[in-house]
Image (cartoon, rainbow over all chains, first blue to last red; front, side):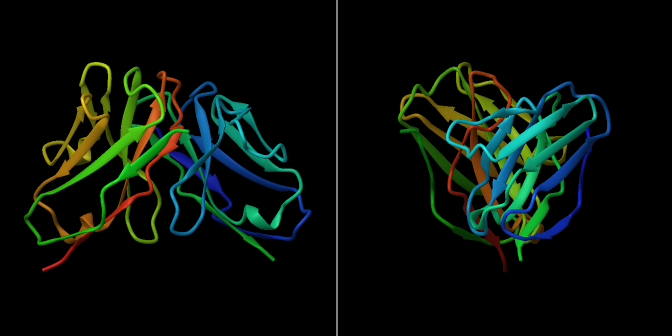
Length: 107
Length: 119
């Protein structure tokens, strides 16, 4: 199985901050990576696909980058509504796997 | 607008079977894959398996092989996930999530179904 390791596991930041979450794959997955945001009690929501493509309707302050084994999700200017847990997911191979999650708290 | 609606919460005894439904509306049901994802309380997301809505073929995570069955009913645009031989550690929220046109990411998610396994 392809393992995805996210860092950090927990993050506390202020409104307006630039926030970066990383995801490292145990083997190369080209750009077959997605990012999701999950709020408490809700289903995950797709933010980024193919490592850097913004899903329709997702605010432009979200962006993704990377290929191979190292990926990054960036929030350029943190907004109050951006709290939640963020997961990366690879779709290069089965079983599909997720990172362990990064919980983002707004200070 | 695409909507994915799952059946309601369930409480089950250890050793029993649960069957959860997932109905899609708002677009073509075929040409897509429907995945199922498990999320234990306070934990992360774990992919369980999928059904190809075009041909009914399935693929399961080895961990759940033999206990999980996923089927698609194209006449009602509904997918079902059945998990048998339930144990306490199966207590979780189960999500269905649709992958459109074999793109890879999960575009649309159901609201989740809480399954509680308790004697």
